[in-house]
Amino acid sequence: MEHIKSALKKAGVTDGEAFETAPVTPVQKPASPFVARKAEEVTVAEKVEPKPLRQVEIDNNHLEKKRIVSKSMDDPNHIAFNLLRTRVRQALSDNKWKSLAITSPTPGCGKTMVTLNLAFSLSRNPGLKTVVVDLDLRRPSIAPTLNIEPDRSIAQYLLGRAEEARDCFVQVDPNLVLGLNSGHTPASSELLQAPRMLDLFRFIDKELAPEVVLFDLPPMKSSDDALGFLPRVDTSLLVVASGTTTTEEVDECELQISELDKLLGIVLNKCEDAQTEDYYY
Image (cartoon, rainbow, N blue to C red; front, side):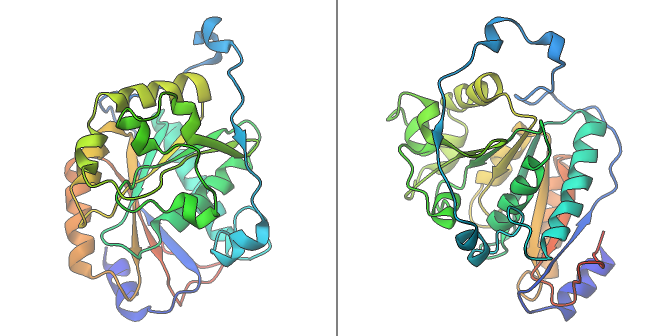
């Protein structure tokens, strides 16, 4: 942590990204709702082609204005997310994990930007179908960031106001599907523990059949949503912002996630000293 603390003290301008990942050791953990299965374990019934999702095209220029650089790869900062992608894939593969949550100590650290860049970078790999789910129910950011108007929101589905989970998802790339939210949901913590959440997991696992699922969670110090949801995933990343996040916030959140044995690593965002060839690991 010493190099993270040092970087937080000296960095304060929002250009470039860097990340640190904690050492990854294969461990036995409680089973998550998402199971990495071999092809021969999939039944004939599961191979039935589902109804197609709504297709949405996203303009690359709009993405780059929002600092989503991993789709077009024109901005050299996309290399940081390629490196993050490689380390995440290795950790998931080594541990037979499938689900990854992304959170931050406070708002404004760039967790949604990191989530989307990582998702686009992952989905460029042939056969690596990636699903992103916006579970920041109080302040959803994925749909507004990408300028997409959802037909239905995940909050509506969890509340029983949308019958089909499929209506909450859109396909933006051949290997990338997004689960969207809109508006503000006050009772978010209760919804994330609602029985319909398991139905949502089953839909994602059986009908979307992704290799990787990313969950964009709320900031940890804004509510108990993230801490309540983390036991449902395999592991997580904590996004911190140079010049904004304090070392005390990093220490507190790192401890809370580590106590659940769910911390894969820390992503240091908004670091002025980061260059495409020099990152914190």
